[in-house]
Image (cartoon, rainbow, N blue to C red; front, side, top):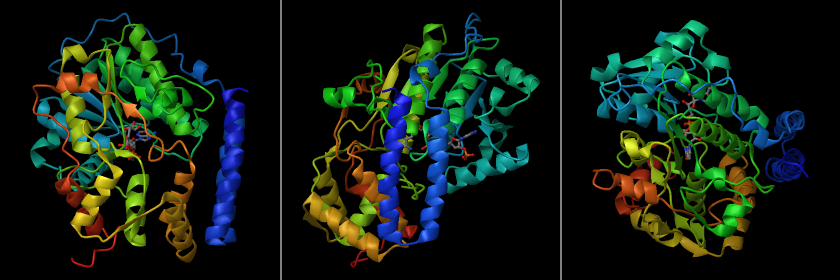
Length: 445
Ligand SMILES: NC(=O)c1ccc[n+]([C@@H]2O[C@H](COP(=O)([O-])OP(=O)(O)OC[C@H]3O[C@@H](n4cnc5c(N)ncnc54)[C@H](OP(=O)(O)O)[C@@H]3O)[C@@H](O)[C@H]2O)c1
């Protein structure tokens, strides 16, 4: 059975369970019909593009890598950044403004450059990163990753290729529901267009933000430890459009690397808010939803898992620091917590913050979650969680160790280290969750 057929089968199974959940929880025919429409889109897209992912990972042969490497790549005058309106991108932008003197050209979807600049400023302000003195170095470029030449005209694409000395590609359509065919344009073809730009006129080192999710296949689950030098293997257990699109994008980059493009791959684990502010978009993170549910239920499940997440400021600092070193070229780096704490210790920190939570067996907790989901149909977090926890491949249930020797060795001697997951960090996150109304205040506050 090919990957395409396998994916269709998965969507069929997933669809029926999703609808069942929708029905049990919402008993709302409009909600269900909305999901039918959504799922119809998913299935049609999957059948039309149920393709061989390996073939998708072959780079456009017309991209040539015979140019010389940009002279200014160590001390760049101009940097291209994608995804600056996202979580990782905005911290990369801030870090690049601090650690270099380069102008930062940001590919951004907008109506005009003024609108783009406003979006970037507002996003920096939201994360408490905005500094007026950097304004002139932030240059919006109206574009779209999902379009040929990044949505730029040929002259603008060429002008950019001539100007830029180094590239950080963090932009992606990050969505865990859509199939590969929907995400392909932005995540795969967008990466190909970024590679095209990297290769044009002068080779510009390309720093690509990928994800450890490229290893979420049975082959790697069985091995338990994933090294940075491992090549992500494709087997039939490798489900989910997002992971697949990141996998194919990595293949394109590896192909480009083999053909001469200086580049590096960064694979973060789950990223949470900054260790200084805790600020995070809270509507789509499964771990945050799990914590919210535990606090609202007043109980947490027994889980044999480690909390490997990393704060976004660590991720951006590490990527920029590593990217400044010549020895990073053509390496991959895993950005995971070097000293992850067990789930139970993490929950103890939450209790120490002021929430009185009781530990109960996992299956019992799931039953409590189902009950609260049924009595609070307006709270979509519960149904989201039920769906998420049903996936036995989710990392809260299935532990996998991402070795980060390259990252640790190459950050050694620099001031950059991952903050410990201690009371200080947990308090910062929970305080932000409380301030934004995401979780109720505890009785002592
Ligand atoms: N967050 C995590 O836990 C995590 C973990 C591992 C790896 N990663 C990787 O880290 C990178 C950044 O993730 P994130 O969490 O920062 O995602 P995010 O907050 O969703 O940001 C995604 C960024 O990509 C941009 N983008 C999406 N489609 C685009 C398009 N067609 N044209 C131009 N820009 C487009 C978005 O622009 P708009 O604002 O216009 O939508 C946004 O700036 C991704 O490559 C992701 O795979 C993230």
